[in-house]
Image (cartoon, rainbow, N blue to C red; front, side):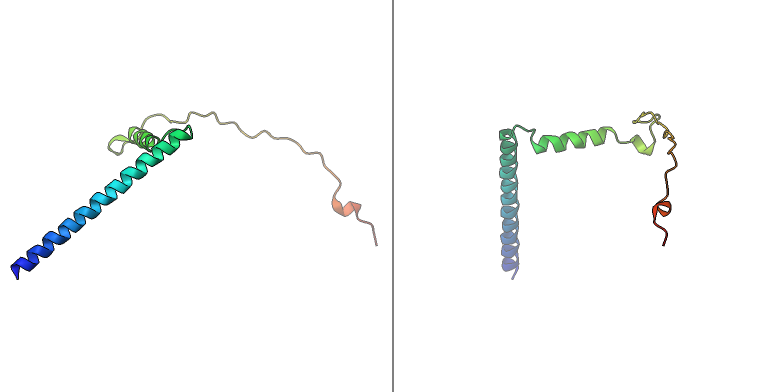
Length: 98
């Protein structure tokens, strides 16, 4: 009985290893195909774009939960300009009287 349990354990471990290795191969082929496809179109590979965004997010992360001093967006706020609208005739005044 011990031998059958051990053989099943070895069999399913090898089966899992084959599955993981096949998925890694599929992902590697998809990665290479995507990079070649983006280079043929003249664009930056998506892997590079995602990695660059990840590095930007990691760089801008607040250290230890503290807030940074100063704002990232120093845009100037402009108030709305008021413009007078001349009074126009109301639609009621234009209707014919019955």
